[in-house]
Image (tube, one colour):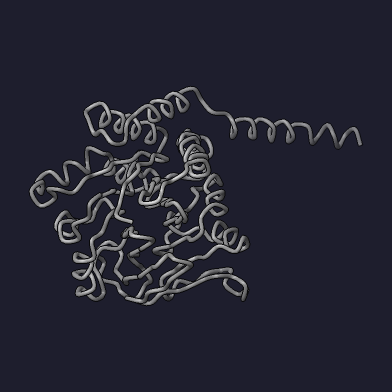
Length: 335
């Protein structure tokens, strides 16, 4: 027995060291988290743009130098990206729990990639909530949200384990038609798969799905969706990674519907944003380290502003909110 224990001791010590390192939060991550917390999401000045650059540089540290390579599990475990993102998401989860939203107002949080949480006075709605590798901090959102919407099956948008947790708690999950879900065999699960143009009302939350391709690839067979969500007097639109509509006429109809908040992939062209004409534009898929250095470099605040700059006249009158992971803003609408 003593010999066995002696042989197992090195393994035990390795497990302890690895566990401690996994949980350890470096001072650099804590400091950057604090700087972001002190920044004003409603003020897009040079200091905030510089903070976005610093955030990206921090996320880039340790990633594969080859722009075509994505982070490995080793990067996710030993790198500090996950630890910083977890700090940001944990703060957002705490705020979602504690923040009281008055009627006629809405608060919107950015999570990671295209993820967002919307809280009104009566409902909490999550879009593309998906945990990163070796992380489970967003699973608590499954407990808080009344409805979770998934735009397509990419891993940074679609988290089956998180969705199962929500369904086990009696929450509702919305998927585009054709998206296969591992846990849909239970009759008690509230899963709805929406066709192009189909509308559903979930306890006062009206949702309409629009079939799209994936980043302009012209493929309308694979399930991808934009969602129009209406609750109270609020109208909110979320794109996922979709770009072109299967039925372009449906996209034109959105321009007349009076969109309050447009949660838009940062690569959606300003002409499309102009045509939707929302009151508030929230570009997402920012600080995207999960797909490697190239996409990370193309997802700073500065990159988005440079992309929009030639079309300033087209975007005139549209308020732009650029958010860090875990940040939020409040918007008043006509209830």
